Amino acid sequence: MAKKTKTVKDALLDMDRKAHQATLPYQKSPPVKALAWLSELGDQPQMLTISGGVLALGALRGDRRLARAGARMVASHLLATWAKNIVKHRVDRTRPFAAKNDEDRKPTPGHDNSKEETSFPSGHSAGALAVAQAFARELPEHRAKALAGAGFIAVAQVPRCAHYPTDVGAGLAIGWASEKLVDGLFRWASRPGDASPIRPA
Image 1 (cartoon, rainbow, N blue to C red):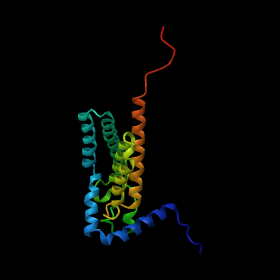
Image 2 (cartoon, rainbow, N blue to C red):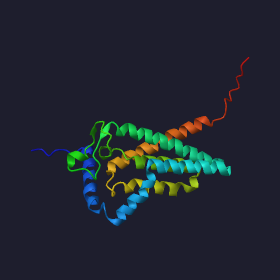
Image 3 (cartoon, one colour):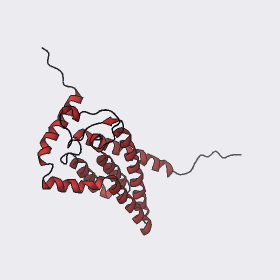
């Protein structure tokens, strides 16, 4: 009998299964609980509060660069949240903490909006990376720290059994793309006026 060829999808689901099985015993341990608590900085209210705070601080101090960073952060986070919600509302996937078998771990088309069935993609990862990149656009000297913070929030979703690695990867892709789109819009809005030598008669 010919051996069945393993597809990329099978390999990714197998990686998710192994990650789930490896981290599940430690889900309620003190270190993972602390990790989970810190990673909640990536939740929507917290990210918007941080982003709005940077914008307000920049405006109060007259720091245009900081204010622009805050504006970029808010816009990027809102777009990333909108994009990940579109996907979540079209894909059902049981979160690791509620999954009972391999079938539960598989993403399937569906519209279940309950918390337990919206594992794919990771909103924390999407929002955190979008905000970190937006901040780093205006303050590149802090890029490493910003991206490290986003990476911490994203990676923490696996041991806390809130998401699978592929959920996190998809969330990061959404966050990256959202910030890139916002950056393009900001660049377009800030470009100089028409410099064409042709003038109306």
